[in-house]
Amino acid sequence: MEYVAFEELVAKVKKENPILFELDHDEMPDEKSLEMFQKENNIKLPRKYSDFLMGFGGGYFGYTNIYSIDRKSEFYIMLNQGYVPDNYLAIADNGCGDCYVLLKNSDCIEKIYLLEHESGKLYEVARDILEFLVKYGLRKEL
Figure (cartoon, rainbow, N blue to C red):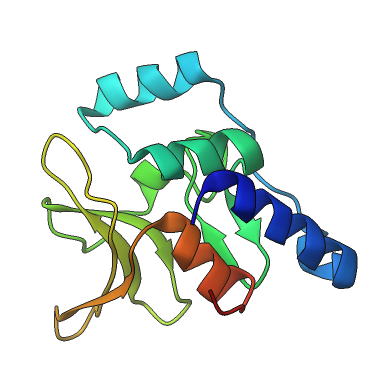
């Protein structure tokens, strides 16, 4: 899914069910603060994730939450890494102790995985952050 189509779908869902978007979202970074965050943490976030953060800010999003780079937020990505091994980056949680993660090296991979906290098992759940947000945040089919 391309970002423009994602924005259109979000606008449609907001119109149909505005209560899903009434909780506060985190501060939306600009390109410069996003670059600074990536440099400070030696992480290259996928473009679609960066676009989402700049357009929506992270935090509460529909039926889910997404970690942000807003240092003042409880959803600040670097505070939510918990038990996650170093080769993953947690970007959200399911409220039951499991995390949704990206595989990382110097660049994070687009695919989103569910990392079970008890077993350590990994399951692919989406091709990218936008597909994840449509599926879990908006509860829509692609």
